[in-house]
Length: 98
Image 1 (tube, rainbow, N blue to C red):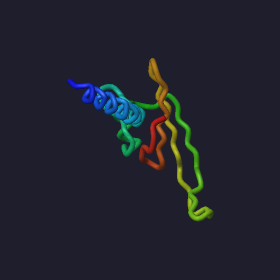
Image 2: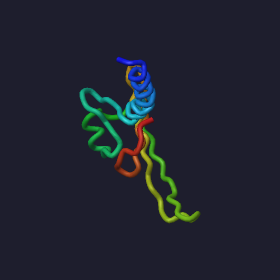
Image 3: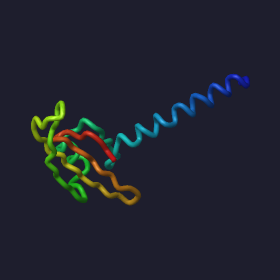
C-alpha cells in the first residue's frame, strides 16, 4: 500500500471511531439482545427483566414558552457487573440510554 493509501486509511479510522462510540452508547445489551431507543417499556422488560431501580417524574410540555400539557418520564436503572445504564422512557417509548 502506498503512503497516500495508508494516510487515507488512518483518516477513515479516526473519523469512524467517534461514530462507533456513539452507536455503542445508544444501545444496551441484555443477554443476547440489543435494547435501543424506540422500543417500548414492555419490550425492554421482556428482554431484560425488571430494572434494578426505577423512578417516574411528571414533566411539563412547553411550546412557545407556555405549558401545553404534561408527560411522564420513566427512568429505569440496570446495574450489571461492569456498568450501570439508565434507560429514559417518555411515556412508553425508550428515548435514550445513559
